[in-house]
Image (cartoon, rainbow, N blue to C red; front, side, top):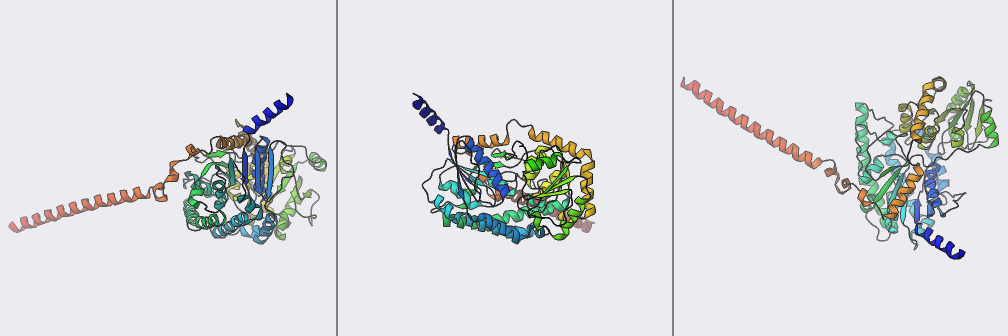
Length: 515
């Protein structure tokens, strides 16, 4: 009887279990953290999860089933690429200069993923999946995996709403107050900024349609036998999960298929390792935490900038905890403590933490808002300038440009943040906004993934904009027709007036002759 009951429970549980494939091929740890948080959460709910990424999960969930397909060699390539790019030097270059180089790199990385031995085994296998979740990051050809496995497609954007996502689901993007994500503008743009914003948007759109999409179409044809057209792939997403929330990002329009799940990676704070716990507990003047994230390495900072930081920190009475990737830091002041890795979320949760000096990555921005900690952002690349602008706009911190860092400027910013209570007040208030949710972000994401699985997609959430050509969407055909009609009416009026004036002049001349 007991065996029968256990078997029945197993069968019942199996009916609610789905096979889920997640594609998160980026070598950046921050991208993996987000994808891994979602897929582990789905596995904990009893689903059978397969995750394709360069990483290996060291603590697989106890419930459900979790399997890694590891893109071996990707982490080494990522680290090499970061060093070669020298992101501190790239900070000087404009986004428009970097855009074509970045696009070409992403096409290459997309092919590298599809061509990987482990990915090829998956593509040519007999496996079945109920849904395919693909990270949205200029990797359009990889979305053909949903077609390959005859499963609904879900996109996961590691950023909030942006032009890369909006184009694919017909979401409006009013350029008057929504800047391109990588420009770092606020919603209140000047005339010149709006001009740059329009030009950048048009350049991004043109690059996609005339280079990116054709190149990805070639990849689909190369790696998927009888593969679909790129245009049947990119507009096929049932929903898009966005790493955003109104407490973190500026409010923008959303179509129904866009779901906010910003903060799904944030965990309940844990007790720190003993040595770190004692250090923070005993910091009577408080603690400043400094980290440039997982991609930017503090150890690669130019000597000049590193010395400015050391000189500035040495003048502070607070304890400074610095994520430093080398064993030693030459010239380190006594109040500065270094570590190659730190449990950032748990550090930010400590009551003695007064300030977070950050690169302004979205995960770090989310975590500082979650814990209500004032921040000083030093943005370098990607969406960091936009996030830094948001930190300033929310009143929870300040920002300083990398090229603007001097001892005087940096000390001034830090002192403002430590002495003005409004920053802490605003940070706590913003944290309240973040926490005031009906459902947690992870549970929200899981619900919508299961929703798509239950209904075999979500075509009823698809907006009609996706069925329009670009000139129809922007009403260019209507504008041309109206302009032509207006010109025709003006021409007729002009002709009538001219004819009337001509007749009047003739009559006037005849009258003068007769007199």
